[in-house]
Length: 390
Image (cartoon, rainbow, N blue to C red):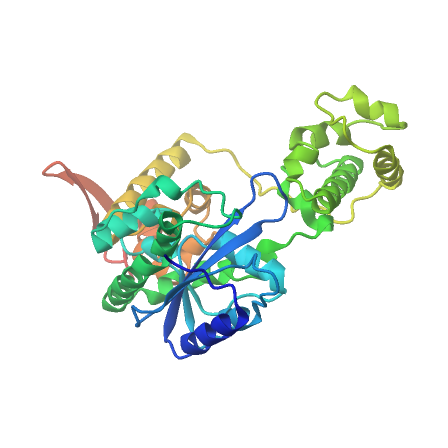
């Protein structure tokens, strides 16, 4: 019978052993189906180079202090290997107020190791380890105790195979000298602003379709009110009020509580005191606290520009296949449009390593110094000017 760590002495001893490791693998199980805040139900951790250390920690155990484990997460000398870990990072950050340090996300690394965008853990296990994961326990109610051996085996597989996956990717990145290629993505992953849940900033998640200051001001008030209420009730924000309802309310002149009910899909379970507070804030909202960034000017794509964009897309696909890299990491569709319209566009594709393998060729192609042909049924790109690649 696999045991979960529920006692402080065992957790302390485990963390003391893990402090000696070069890297550890980490995963969590949590529930967030009907709540605003994720409920952490299980933590899985394994030592990087010791196969005998694979444990599950019970964060629901009464009196268990997770501080020793959080100290491991914040230790910059120990690399934390995880997969698709944005939600895990969010949980740890909001539980402790501190961001984990030295994190390696195998899903991010997969984008420069030839596995495309957002490869699943199961596919990595199959491809790099040659094993299959039993998914029958995927929809376990992780807060229910006791967990049986099958459930725990499934949970622990998320950190055991991860050791071999990391070692494989580490070797590949060293061989191809691509470790720097994923630095920006990891920096974004560990940026506290990525997990900002301040109600005052909630409006930034909305699509602003107007430049009218009074409407923007009401959008800010409405979104902040919804976020505050969602956090207080611990309910998903969409179950408090949908985005389209907020957009519709912001367009209206709301003078009484009855006016809210004139909007379709307005929730019926909002307390009158909450509506009164919202109405008072809306009436005060004359000027936005902050204006959204102005939309980037779009000159309208001419036939020539459209042709350039299409050629750049072909070059992007060609480059990604040549270097076994995910297109999402190299350049986005808006970036291609920007390059087509401006040689000095302020986009990542024209900077650093992206420029070296794609941006320079993209500008040369756009300016008639790089050509494209089909040979033996395959697309080929080639320089047609001495200045094509300086």
